[in-house]
Image (cartoon, rainbow, N blue to C red; front, side, top):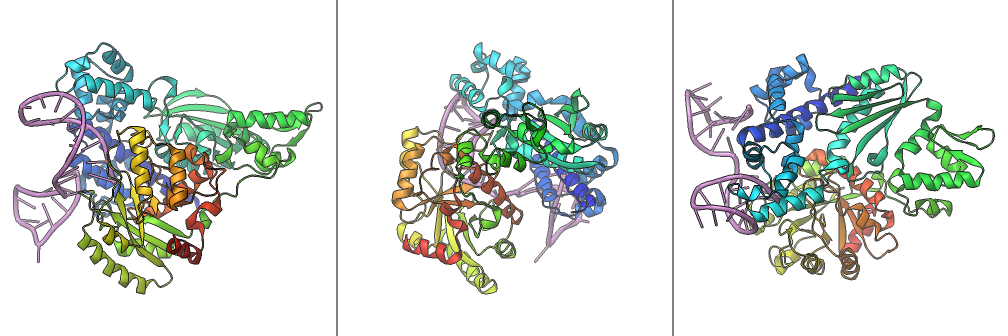
Length: 585
DNA sequence: GCCGTTTTCGGCCCGACTGTTTTCAGTCG
């Protein structure tokens, strides 16, 4: 990819981010996330996110040809591209500062409530809210009561919104990281740029974003960084390290190191701390030292290895350890005995088994486009899994499924190399039953069953309902097991070992949902199954639009972080083996 | 704010559910 298209892409990302921020602040202004103006800007951001060509090069007229972009949005984009800011956005930012906006991230608090809290109780941030909670002032407000106080207090605790525990969901950090990396790669004299830290581990939430740059001169790198539009405030400005904050309060550290030390620095800043300690111990055993500059001889200080991570692992007698595994949970010992798991690569994925189209109420690409895109990506098999009828808004009736089946028959002729399964994403009810009836379900090729409601049952009840779905003969896989939305809503609690046992016994697999909001099953739960071969997984995108097939890489990252072995992931299997497996189940 | 078998403004996938109230805000996909 050339420099020009790097810039084009990062500028589109930047514009999407700006429009989303505008929509976010409009929610407070309008008093509802469902307000039509809010939804209009959100829809415009969707359209811009799916745009390939650089929006910055388009005229207002060209922008308005995009579905969902009209005069006002096009005008704001041009204003941003031409002047670097949007006057109305700046007004909203002044009226609703980041610390106040953060309050809306707490489940149970919407725009109306936070504005009410500010008007009546002068609550401007999470700290103020906690004081109001302690003083039991919130129950005095109209529409709120003692239960609301309890719920809010619990939500604050669980989301880690306060103090130094503050972490940002990966879905917000990753685009920012990509934007910063692309921008710094374009600076003359820069040899390499990588993000490190917990983002490189593919953690669900990120504390600070660490970006490492290999360059002989730091000054131009730092200048380029602090002048990025994403940078709202510069905290520290030094020769090798600059720390800045985004408008949302995410801290970004940029470090510049000599190209010859890049591997040692990347290893050091990627961590984890526990992983580094184990590596340092191995170095000491050999009479060496390991720090952020090099693996070096303890006496002479002569470097042993420093340029690449691989060279350092090799010198320490280890196989290369992928960043996702570096949590100090046995990976160093495994690498010593050459016992690291054989992990999934994106190229291993042969099929996608959770796909929606506009037949589902929330699908955004047509069935024809979804199938053509899957075929174009070289997939061998897919399952079309529209929402089941129990999801009132988005689900399909039996009749609609029959009609869609006719469309699929036509598409199978059009794409003979792609095996198309017809299925459904069923809803697991509070009691573990699912949509439709047994006879109807038997006619479907592949069923995902997912929790979409009743998030507040006890762990015992959640485990029971999920296990009942696992043993339903029509159910092939449990979709996004916890139903969490990272940083927004905690998932359901289940006895994960009991779930693994049930899956093993029933021959039902577990989905690893690739969407960055979900990454579900969470990696730390996946890791609990790392020593068992009787549980089968499926990595799926849950695509609602043609662009989302690309999300598969995030699901693969999450599977790697969870030590899931390639041989246990059914959609890495060749078509023949996969189809035989479904048939014999 | 966007859209339109568009011309000047009404409709925008929407229904069930919870916690709070007695009409509404927020949550789900």
